[in-house]
Image 1 (cartoon, rainbow, N blue to C red):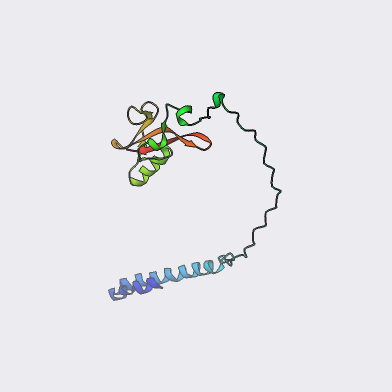
Image 2: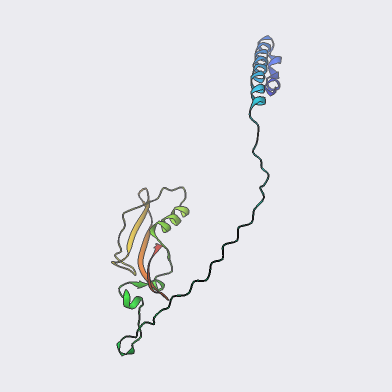
Length: 179
């Protein structure tokens, strides 16, 4: 019926406007006759939105405590030298993770790339071929990957294998940074 109100100025245009106004009225009535029954017969059932009661979690079965295995002490080395198993003895050619610069904070090239992509929204970034590092703290053992948008250089992702001394012995990992 809104079309009838909007087209009311046609009535002031005289007989040609009256004819157009009449046609608009007929189309509006026919449309209403077709749409109303279809809307009325449409499936208007909605799923039950009432919350279902929450059941408490079942209690886990109590299992008997396992008996700890007996461990034989590690025999001392000859001359009673203490055992040393750390990064410096097991991986002397790998840099210690805490000796890397602070910007080596990502666990992988992909993690660093995601940060670059978030910082450069609206640009289509791509990683170029990863190459061995030719400089930096892990020259020869690390990697260097350029990031570009079109032909424009955006940044480099540099990664180093590194070692961390833990209670369980030396742990190798990779740390990456954006430069």
